[in-house]
Length: 422
Image (cartoon, rainbow, N blue to C red; front, side):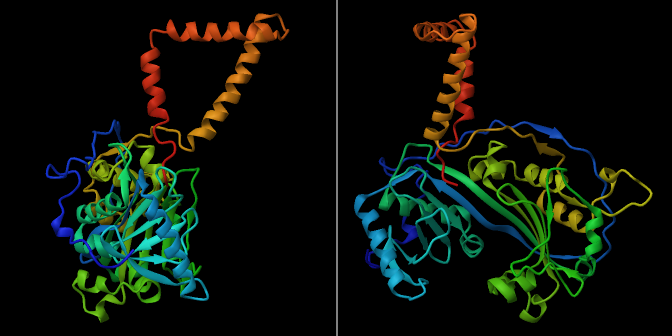
């Protein structure tokens, strides 16, 4: 792949727009089937005057997976480019620029676990698994690209690339995998409150664990919590952390200073982020399949998350912890992220995994069920000649079931997420 003949994104309309060509499939968005329930009313503790200055609010990252197929020549070129990238650096950390679907991007020599190829630029990362399989591509839209261009522009770019290197499989070819929503504050009081004693007011579901960590495995520095993360990776996490130190010591994303409208000296201390991370399993259990569906219920999702995992102010006069008031950190974050909405989504379970494995499991269970029926009908004796009779009985039972069509629809709903990329 050469780096010439690059695409100007502004020359293209979104693939879902009316102006898309006839061979460009349109994404069909359906209103998700979602139920809500009113949650318990939790009072807010008083927030002192000048407690925090809001600097910015937005999405730190968004990730989607795609059901697409690659052209054969693209598969070969991806493998060749990866080998070339490996050869650029003895430690295997090389990267090589190339034209990927009309845009200049870089093939990395290595890829995260579960992916075979990692292709990236400043706006997004393509994590590509087995190119011969469906749902093999996950695309992570990065904070810099989201802040500069917005989600729609990045999604349009990603879909143009995928269309130019292959084709989408069917009309329903995109799934939301992860969304990180955040809000940044400048606050000296928060720096004084992030002490280990803060955990006395932590309330979380019994089955969950509260974890304190940072990338350096330093829990507390000089008596101050630098990163507090509640919840479970892969499902739902809420994190409160020192964004100033994260930038200077880890990410190097100093472009945030301009976004915050702060001078570097001001931005290098007392800036804290509250971030809510919705992972794939959490989204699927609430029937959220696309980013548009997430946006439609974003306030309710955030409110429910910050209710289930919350920081409160300890009330020594009330032994019922569930009645303790939201901590000021939670108060200001909820006001900005979810506007104190009063609904929370209920959980609707679905099945995930590979269809062939699930089918084999169901077949084994069915075989065991038929053996049991055989023995029960024959007074404790297994008669091989009776097994075909059982198949006929099962078929008639389905045909005579007045709710057969409804049960088929429910089964389709239950297994609709099998074989998806994560």
